[in-house]
Length: 330
Ligand code: UT7
Image (cartoon, rainbow, N blue to C red; front, side, top):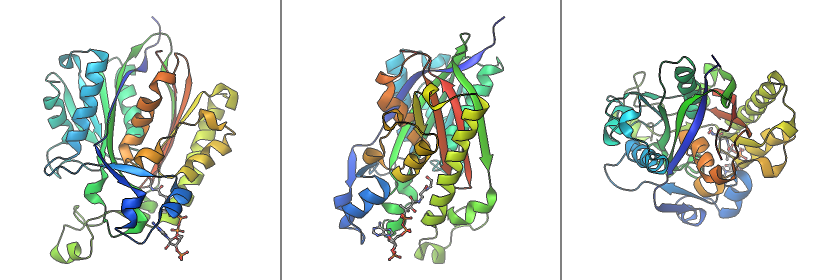
């Protein structure tokens, strides 16, 4: 019997309608379009404004988009994973609600959080369930409402992040397409440089903390930047070396969209031509768990069966890594 690999067989996406441009941010904090564009590559990001709607709203829309495009019966989905750093609530999983709302009533479901690497790690988990033969339809959704943890008075974070969601379906494949290899790492000593300190179990939220914006994500941008550049590029190099791939074997770099300079540095390190680097940071900013599936959605029409895709991500924690996947359909 041939080996079972885990292939992505469908993609879906959703971004909210409201567009927060650099020009609007200029009226909110001391910044300007030239600074944001040259330092990050971001021109605009999407924000979910509707009261009472959380990350599940984004996840549900992306999943419905996939279900409609692929024409699958949601009752056939066996597992729903929502990769997110901004769950709807502290208790009650976002994935369970999402699964019910999309009609995946035969599925079990759970959330996964590894900050900006949530979707990358989620790919590893989803693929493992398929490769083991336990399940045949795993829906992995990357969704974040970053605007819910951003301080719109802090110019070091509010210019970067946006809201969005993307979804992929993993199914078994016997042609050796799909998931090939992974190199995943974590270093908890990095958590002081990017965190939302209050509101968790170490430091429950207090009035005093809220007065100082302690519930919002804070980052020491320069330190995160340096670690992201080094580790994302290093992981991509390692995955190429381990699989005896040269730059000519790579069709696409699918890199976390946190800062165009980090993406460029990763591409340069593996000597990849610009036209092989997926890019949409100018439209959406950093949507945390949604960046990778939003790229797949934007570039889906250009992908060909057998294409070699190198995924790479870096995020708070720190968590980072790279995955090698062969695309499974035209
Ligand atoms: O998804 C994973 C997690 N996040 C990341 O990967 C983000 C990684 N970090 C970055 O992308 C960058 O560090 C930032 C975009 C956050 C900042 O860019 P930078 O080139 O590292 O700037 P910096 O923090 O070194 O600041 C340079 C200057 C400072 O002014 P002085 O001290 O030189 O006078 C900042 O105060 O730019 C100033 N600055 C700004 N100026 C205009 C910082 N933010 C802004 C701003 N507009 N929004």
